[in-house]
Amino acid sequence: MARHLITSAIPYINGIKHLGNLVGSQLPADLYARYLRARGHEVLFLCATDEHGTPAELAAAKAGKPVADYCAEMWAVQARLAEGFRLSFDHFGRSSSPQNHRLTQHFAKVLDEAGLIREVSETQMYSNADGRFLPDRYIEGTCPNCGFDSARGDQCDNCTKQLDPVDLINPHSTISGSTDLEMRETKHLYLAQSKMKDELEKWIDTREGWPVLTTSIAKKWLNDGDGLQDRGITRDLDWGIPVQRGDDPWPGMEGKVFYVWFDAPIEYIACAQEWVEAGKGDDWARWWRTDAGAQDVRYTQFMGKDNVPFHTLGFPVTILGSGEPWKLVDYIKSFNYLNYDGGQFSTSRGRGVFMDQALEILPADYWRWWLLSHVPETSDAEFTWEAFQSGVNKDLADVLGNFASRVTKFCRSKFSEAVPEGGTQGPRELQLIADLTAKLRDYEANMEALEIRKAAAALRGAWVLGNEYLQEVAPWSTFKTDPEQAAMQIRLALNMIRLYAVISAPFIPDACADLLAAMQTGDDSWPTDVAAALTMLPPGHAFTVPEVTFRKITDAEREDWAERFAGTRD
View 1 (cartoon, rainbow, N blue to C red):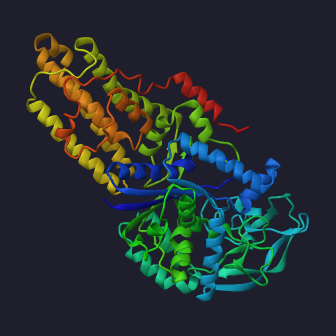
View 2 (view 1 turned 45 degrees about the vertical axis):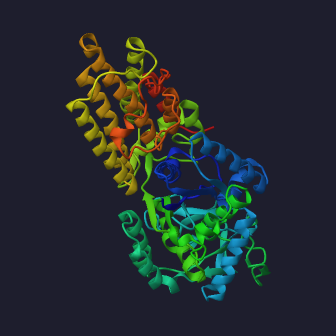
View 3 (view 1 turned 135 degrees about the vertical axis):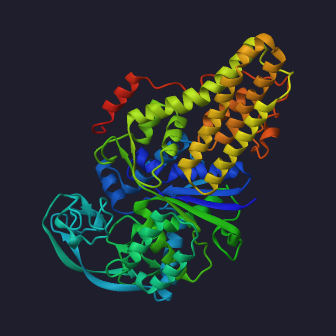
């Protein structure tokens, strides 16, 4: 048994996330956590809400609520939706927690003592109309690199180029829309990333098997242009973690808070402390400190490609630069974007399907299966209603659901609601066991390698083997001439339902729990020996015919949903 620490990129607090957000971090992280638990490993799976920075302030202002109240309400909403999608976090924390306040201020102190924080006098955009300095995300304009007309003052979401507000063409305040902006002098703290460039590059080169997407983005930020730049880690905001050196004030930094991208990754560690203080665990340090046991932990992070620079550069600078024995990430699984029906998902424009809406339409497993089997690993992927309907109907309804229904209903009608006895396996059954074993080993290998699409394809291939066996041996025909042989075929097939439920649970946990319940077994042990696993339900073992495991999506539903989610969210 190994120990695995898993973190998903923490979602912003500003509203309900869409399916593109879900499949870009939390959902594949949950798949991996569930799979590892099923294989008997010890897992700590952490996530949280990212509650600081401009998006939180803007969203709270729009909602007409104090930002602290808004964040508390939205944390509860996001936690409920995470549960709805069966995201199996061991703890779902908050970056505004006291634990993250203390830890962020601690890191600032030790980084300063290590000579990695410098104070910079700089000019910053000031809005005369708003009467305040504008943090980067309060400023939008046209990207000078790609021409995108909604680039933010810190980064262009279109081309991912890091920006400063002064780089933008025709900038304006996102608070008032005013273009009456001017540069004024202020002071901020900078993390001296440039001093850590060589150490960072050596560390990145020691990471084995990282996705090309991850390493290429990291290397680009390290080496393109003038190379890795120092990064401001404070902002002029009211909401956030106050700038302090540990427990002590930081002269000249009064009224400022730490930049959200400095404190947000630190929340991964703080979240484990929250987990302990919530009474769910007893030792966070054995997961996070290599002097307390974390040297035996494998740490995997999941995120969209836009988050890669902060996790391959900024957060490692914080960890390495501290000089303290913190656990560094071993593997970063990054994803491209999931687009929506010929365009992009858009939170601001309400374009696409959002997590709450998805669960109102269909149960979580329908979405989990389609999203994970189409996860944008090697390139951007696209959600279309036609593809969704086809995937659900062909994979879930026609293959897995149909198999469970046919087998149980036939057994009930010809034998009883109990596993029949009689008959002996022959060459066809031995071939099926060999084929299932090969497909299962393929599935396992792809899950271990975090090749999620390939794992989904292997799993579906295992389901197909059962249907092909039924079609070939045709127990409904065999029963007419050799009832005992038909009994053996159905006994094997009933055991295959249990096997499918066990190995499919990381993808579709609710349906698999229902299938195990129908088979009247709580044994969800992983089938290391397929032949033995296919005898787990002995003759005489009672079962019930399950409800329809997956229903088909109709053309009328597909057309209705395509129309409903093409426009603007209320």
